[in-house]
Length: 189
Image (cartoon, rainbow, N blue to C red):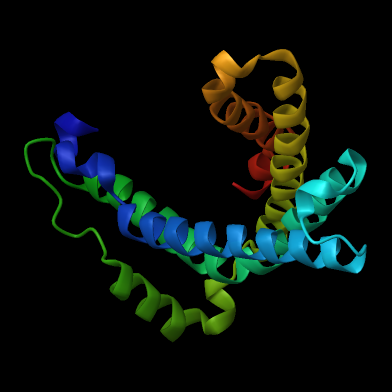
């Protein structure tokens, strides 16, 4: 790909991915924080950490599920644009000779305008149901498993190794999330 289209082709579709990452990351953690605080207050506890482990895991998973329902409203159109940019880049490179770099790759704005013109708003949400399924199950698994891993690792590591707890918990949660949602992602793709 780098040889045929140039090194920059490896970043084709980056703009919608960055926008999606920033928006979904902030929304995901904002919804999560709200869900945790709401649960704690509804149980008469001031701080989420005071809840029993089972309540914290349930809260995290439910907050992830709620975030997973909201995130695809932003993420589906951005992912569709990213995929089309990547496909357009690959198709262009096959059409042009290997010595000519394609100049026909579409910008985010051009793809969005073209989809809206030809397919309407509905065209921006192709794959929305599968994206929502991936997002709900993936976020529930991510946040629920993070709490379990963090609690388990806190019991294993002594104070000298406490700096490892959050990164290792994040790695474990990421694995759990993708194990749970990858089959849905494969079908969606």
